[in-house]
Image (cartoon, rainbow, N blue to C red):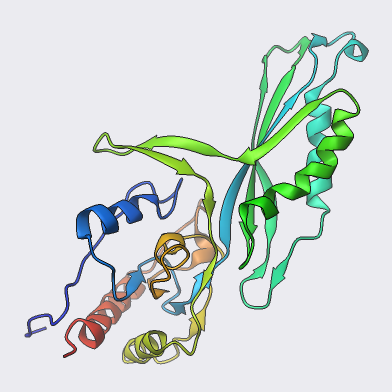
Length: 273
């Protein structure tokens, strides 16, 4: 660029972002950088637009205890798989909140496990993980309350049902153990925000039709914007709708354009007086 930066530019390459977004980013900012960023730019796929936010994400763990029995005599047991099917049907048909910009809250079962795993035996325990996408204003108690009604119904049939926000201890490649509670808040930056407008103007130097939009997936912004209220924006090559698809790809041309875009952002913010 031919000039010294007037601001500190920190490039943070986070680990564990897929299972627990924002967790390693928080450690990098608070324990390594040790200063509050003026602006955060996330390099996730944005189709070369400026992303202003996204829904939050919670993982809800539901545990069901029934009564085991021989599969040839199922009437002698309480099959938690049957109870689980009732829970899934219930939550799939419940009305969830909607935000005018972030869109509709969603819920989807993603992991199911039962014990014991024996084909001629009805299991006595079953666990399911629900991926719940939240909108602005939703708290932990909001994502759990939809399970209370169906839980009471199943308990009258003899099942024991519990629901909680899932937790886990993750280990990074540096052997650092990180405790995670899987509740990551939604966030949204106003399209009238000064830094957002300056970023868009800078990007339009290389992408004339770039505009504002929001992500469907979740990012490290759950920490910077959702928790710390730091202005956070997204800009990167690639189409977010291809994320985790078997044919996920990004064009070399978009990578080159995005690189020029990052240079424009550096010129706009890191070289200012």
